[in-house]
Image (cartoon, rainbow, N blue to C red):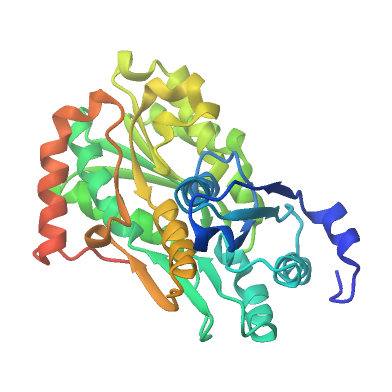
Length: 343
């Protein structure tokens, strides 16, 4: 799609727009209009897009901001993403927050065109004075759930389901493996990705993830972790179909506390914990920075020490494994444990 395409055509082909407003409970916040651009999969993915929405709604409640949401379609291009971001910037939304690395090229171009607008992007680094690059120590959260997985596993075999095979997701796998191996150096880890780099469908192929997980269960895997966006649903379904906790099978979610996601209510009982990537925290901090007239810029690293990552405890079944995970978290914070990355 070319840059000059009319905004109306872009919206019809590539986006769903929803608008929300609130009455003011903060004089400064009432003057702030937040634009949020969701990644492929959109709100309702039970993953990082929903986490972004949680941060947005907290800002609406606490700060009284107004907001507009846009969503990139499955076949969106860099050009169509640029038009979505321009739509927000042109109509007075500031900050404009892009959820996901797929907006990287588009936001890099648009930020230069609107130097007075504050932009932020999740999972990508853009070198621009008006951009906050929100990155997460996902490997640290993955290390913690790796500890939990290895401690919970009775078979000594665990699994990993990745979305697109890129360094960002490899970091989840590397951290998970390191955490598991810290508990059981001889643990066997089965791994499967839903698509190669560039294959955007990798985030929304639950049937493929279900088949892959079924294959892992057949090999003796009894705990599996998915970092695969909407595809993760298939892993949950396979573990549920295999008998779930009654058969000693557990799933580990990602990004949001997936045990509490309404759209996953049918499979929640198999979700032992989730590796949390606190996109909600980062989105809220970006908005609050603008409200306070102190906008975030540059690389903002959300790690364990910043409450930017962690693991979920909503399912009481994780209680027996918390001590090991919490001990590991303290060692990571102190620097005693350095979690590796793929990059």
